[in-house]
Image (cartoon, rainbow, N blue to C red; front, top):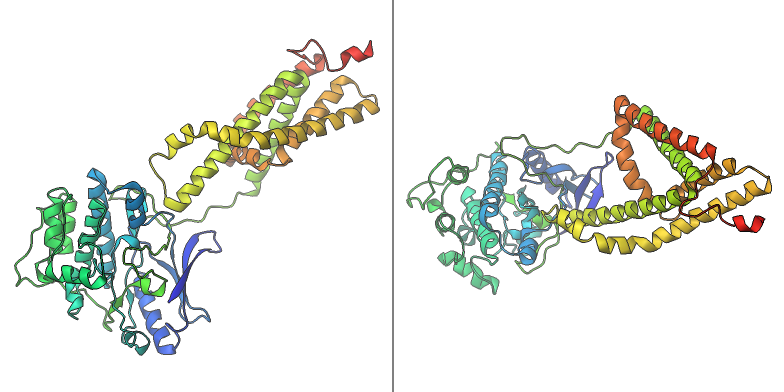
Length: 495
């Protein structure tokens, strides 16, 4: 019913763009209903929910844009890393329920909480595809016999045609937490009808879930919605502020979801994107990540990076230019030693850039991991080998330009004290702008940018670079030191 794209806003913020198909929102009535619901769902603001950022149901191609979270779904995360254990499981259960509570506070239900609708940012879950006002009474949907939910996570009362309440999301939360803890659906696998029949009978398997979480999930998976604990009770227990919830008396009422004056039922947002018929398959919808933080911190709001001012760009250019001249002075004072040090430094910087890019690409795909740092260190030998060929090519390019500059100086009979600094400047420029030089510019720029933001730090760095360059320039004026060689190259040809 729709396609999801990774897109970028004008301010640089990345979003998940859901493009809706015309047969879903084709008439004015459906578009108006979708517009009302999107306006309502904009009120959902939680670090545990990838909320709606923008939408235009009236566009020629209707769309909904949500926050983008680079990370694997819980379904893929468990398949790759194994079940969630220990404190991470308690953190997962709490964060997921916080997201569901935020959706309920907006007056809507999610109705499709499941492993493929939970993206993992490290150990922190982010809930996606929360409830959207449904158009299920529209013949375009009802005539095809749509069932709004996923077998194994769909509450039993929905199968009986009862009106959904908050208990629907409590049941789905418990089933999803059980999957995270065990790596398997609580109602097993197989044909959808068999799975739904087990859910209707309350035949769930929580083997492997640690106690007391197992007893809490057992109560939350009760086939009778009135017996399930309320979201507030579960949150109080997960926050350490109340006793472990148990199954309630059958006569206890289920708190209704406070609706707007014009109540509209809800449907999963995932209906507007393509899903696999396999209930365990993941809808790969990605949204913006929010760094995990203490519970009392306010919800993070994406902020577009500020563009550097003219003054900052000028300071950075001056600092980089002074550093290049210092390197050229070192080449004029100690040609062989400085050339060796410079090429090794270029090799290491390019290696670091390649390693950082590799980790960055992995984080964009699956989020930050605790082993990103160790992997960066353990992968250093491989990255050194990967960067060596391009570094050799860049070095030969820069040295070739420097030799050409030396030949020009020789043709005009320039003294050696002039030839070496010119060759040094050409060599440094060749390394900076030569083939593969972007891998050198990137790490150097990362150091120069923060130093150039403030005048004080920039002055300290510039004075240190200028002092070093002045010292090397004074040594070069006295004559080059060709150590470890005994003299300049081809000096024997002059005899």
